[in-house]
Length: 236
Image 1: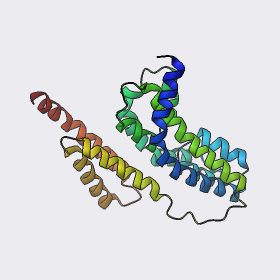
Image 2: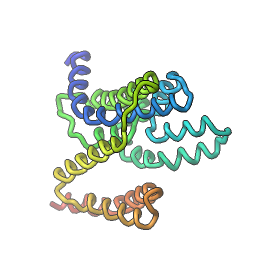
Image 3: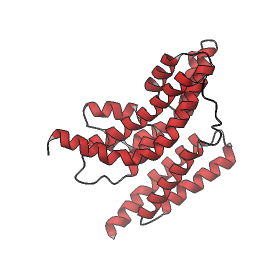
Image 4: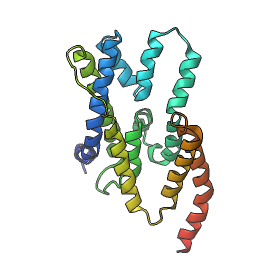
């Protein structure tokens, strides 16, 4: 297969998976651009921050950092707390993202929640190049976010609409992804365990601080249980 044809096929295969994300990212990006504009930053700030940071909620928090006194320690700790879940995402993607040359660097840099969900869960057809597929999923998702942020910054003073509740698009998307995984599983032990531990951590730590404890307890539990299930599958 010629390289150009391989790239084109990978792009065509990746695009449909990212369309639902476009619906959420573009409007949230618009909101971010409008927020930047209202905070006194010009379009170049929105472009550079959405391109180089690309960390969703962290970009909104960064606006406050730029408007307050310089405190690198606070910025570091806040960033670590908000995006610590990516440490766990990264562990599960070591095999998928490793050894892909220059593509590995961008896949690691551009791994957001939505790109992780697609690249981790989708069964890529055998005739589609996996490396290019995952690259296009990551690139398209970032383009959606950056373009929305830039449009919001450019026309922020002219746009006036209520975006309350638009973030539910992302919740709905992750629910669908979870259901697809559920339908693919032979056993639902891991999915149920993840739900149970998340609920427990939500009750114990509260809505604003349960994510990291949930990730840690899920990782430890799955790490302890996986060898037993691997042996059971071999026995079958």
